[in-house]
Image 1: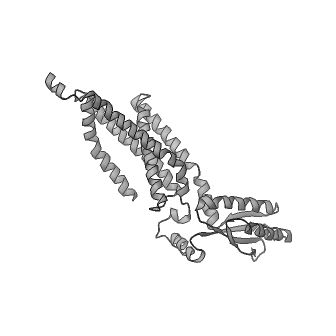
Image 2: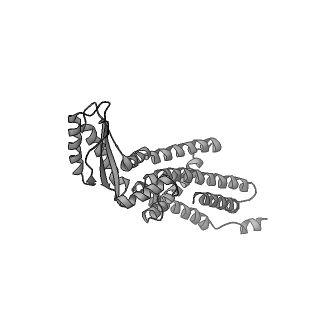
Image 3: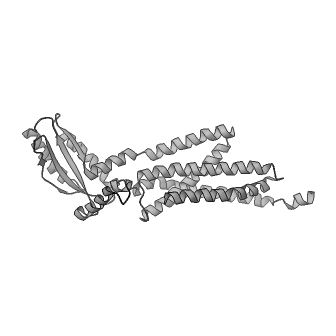
Length: 296
């Protein structure tokens, strides 16, 4: 028995080398993928079509608009509405606003003021240069809204809408949600792990691998989105964060449970590690493959 136990031992240098390589590998993934978090927003597309199936009527209309406006153009509609018929001063202020809007950098074309039949509303349509996506056009929408509010009298309500305004609203709705979702997910998982393991260290180790996996996922997704292999929206970004943290934590829990079982069946921790790995990789691959297939 002593001879068998001796033959089953792994050299000390190998027991040190392999964990060290794993730790360095995880840190490398985190170091390379971590800075990509800040770049991910630059490739996010938050237009209407990105939230709809390509077969939907709304998405088809959005595609048809490209034939009229061009792929790098998006209209913004500025509207002024009053309970009563708009006064001459209000109409004059709106005309002056149209002249100011025309001087903005990304405004390519602007329509004349178009009043409603009852005289209580008026609108102008500004065609914006959409090259660079919502990251470039959203500041213009914010500026248009400020200009509109400053130009109109107190009794007249103004709004910037249309495809450009709607896209900006979607972007604002999802701005910051990625960080909030990530923090909430990590804190929730941390609390659950502390309750399950009753240990302050093991939950942090499990979470560190999950965060490293997320860094690697974000890096890959950013590279593919930047290469225009696919588009990513604000919703997709949020799902990515939650899914990776949840799945990686789940797989870590599975391996930890298998390792604890193997410790009772084997003489050394190395043997238990190998046995736990053999029992874990198949369900992890099957589960991960199912998730990937479901999201494609």
